[in-house]
Amino acid sequence: MTTTTAVPAADRDGRTPALPPATGPAVPPAEPTAPRPGREVYRDALVELMRRDERVVCLDSDTGLFNGVEWGEEGSRYVNVGIAEQALMGVAAGLAKAGRIPYVNTMATFAATRALEAVKLDIALNNLPVRIVATHGGLSAGHLGATHHSLEDLGVMRMLPNMTVITPADGPSTSELLAQAHALPGPVYVRLGRKATADLPPDVAPAVIGRAQRLREGPAATLVAVGSLPVLTALDAADRLAQEGIEVTVLNMHTVKPLDTEALTTAARRPGGIVTVEEHWAAGGLASAVAESVCGLGRGCAVRPVAVGDHFAAGTGGHGHLLFRNGITSDAVVAHVRNALHSPVPA
Image 1 (cartoon, rainbow, N blue to C red):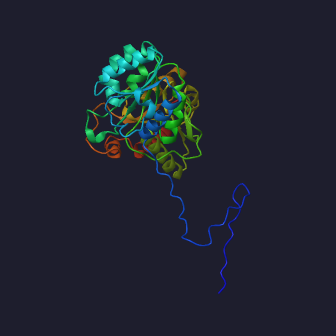
Image 2 (tube, rainbow, N blue to C red; image 1 turned 90 degrees about the vertical axis):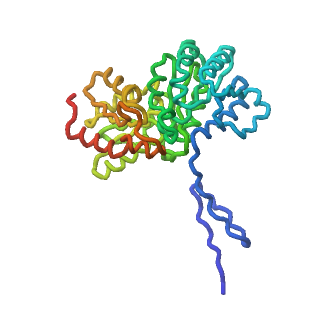
Image 3 (cartoon, helix red, strand yellow; image 1 turned 60 degrees about the horizontal axis):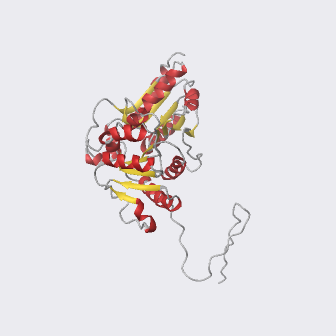
């Protein structure tokens, strides 16, 4: 019996790949890379940044994120101050005043509430280059209950003068936005989640601080989302609406401050208005920021929020479970768009 070996076709660059070995076990195809939690992407990026920039100091509040890190010569620039968030911010301000670039690590609700006075007076007032990297944002620490839900942090931080506020939606954009934030002269608040979530589609343009990331284009309405699961919720809603013949634009508003007002100017002209999606209280967060911006444009555009209402988050449990229980769903987004198209606000 005669055997033949198939020759692989040329790849996209016109090159013919080498043939596999004639003997030995077949090599299985590479498994797709699983998404990584944004906080782990951040941790690894920070360790590398510390090797390249001697000004960088890592200040920890006993988060456990850096357990097992091989610091090497950079170990002297890792300081664990313990569970003392106000002191953490004061130490960061002092180091920044002395020419260092501190990266402060804590949970989102502790950064925005327990340590707020120090953030306001020590860091923001003095416009110091402190990077506050807050994990467990939104409802991602839902299993720990209301004490660890962070539904106020975006509103609190965006109100502080000099503060830049960013929320990466996946691992790749975490790397992109952190690299850009490092070069900013003033304070930065970075909100991260807890566990891994699906990455955004690979063909989207890279995230840029201050510029909304356009994930989908459509003329009927605009969905403006912030954070990993809200962005995925908006994309799912857009898919469902497309099945009904309703094409909408989806914007990942990863930068809550400074807000991309140019993108919102275009969004305000669409007949279905704007629907915001966030894991935050409806007051003070993305919905409020977008409404303030649209109001300043002088256009009759409704901003319909999909967010947690004026109550503490219902229940204790997993991240997705709590989003569902508190109405952060694609059902809610789809309903808002349908209602808006049936009863548009006059211009």
